[in-house]
Amino acid sequence: MSDTVTTASTDPAAPGKKPMSNLAQRVVFGLIGAAMLLGSIWYSAWTFALFFGAVQMRMLWEFYRMMREAGYKPAALLGGGISIIIFASLFLVQTGATTATGLSYVEPGWHTVIYPGSRIGALLGLPLLLLPTILILREMAAWPRENQNFSPFSNVGVALLGLLYVSLPMSLLNVVAFTETGYDYRRVLALLFLVWSSDTGAYAAGKTFGKHKLAPKISPGKTWEGAIGGFLLTLAMGWALGYLLPELSLTYRLVVATAVAIFGPLGDLAESMLKRSVGVKDSGRIMPGHGGLLDRFDAFLFILPVLALLQLLWG
Image (cartoon, rainbow, N blue to C red):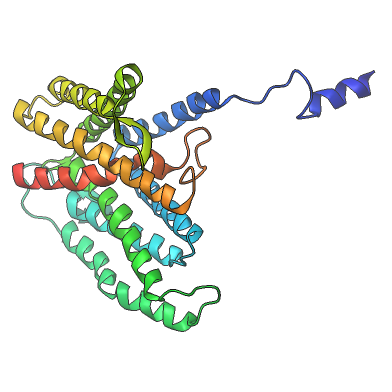
């Protein structure tokens, strides 16, 4: 009897032992991911940089994986290394100063620092000038490739596109997260609130009122009603963020909210088009029930360049 009971309890297909549902997976791993995300943002500039540096490198790897599905052979390892350099360069530039023992902040009123962080960031970025040459030399060394009938420069183009489409926009999060006084976690948190408001408003309005398709050939589930709902809820969140960031004017908050409400869905549609073009459902499987990180942060790829430009122009 004991043998029978033991076998039944260890058999994954045994009756009465149900696997975790997709909804349960989404909830559990969503909570874990949210805790890591919010904790890294809140704790320090270093944890922020480590978390999002890893996120953008994983997103780039997922992009290259999808391109391999289409037959391309991008330099994934080289691209991943360059993506870290891009993120680290902008992070160091934004922090403003460093000491002999590591990174530190320039306190308000200080004008003399030993090693400008911007200089270190610029030096780190110098290898980017050689990147096209390195990628072309890689193709020359591998030429001719088996089972690849298109130009070797297509692989070079895909490798560079990944850095421009994924790594550079995600690295611009450093511009959004820093002000003249240093790292401000509230700005990153505000961006998350705006993006979540856009997604939530679009989902709720689309489910309730959705009739007119927004882009049926790219994403059949999206509707104009959902887009309007997401836009309105994002504007409402932009107003409410005055409690989190009272130093920002209402006009600026509403301009930022409008940018998020417009460019966020466009970023989502762009990634949907990418997945359909290569015939994959999810960009990756790092988060059960949620797909890949590129699926989670696709809106950021269109939002962050706009917000960085606004911050640099507006202050």
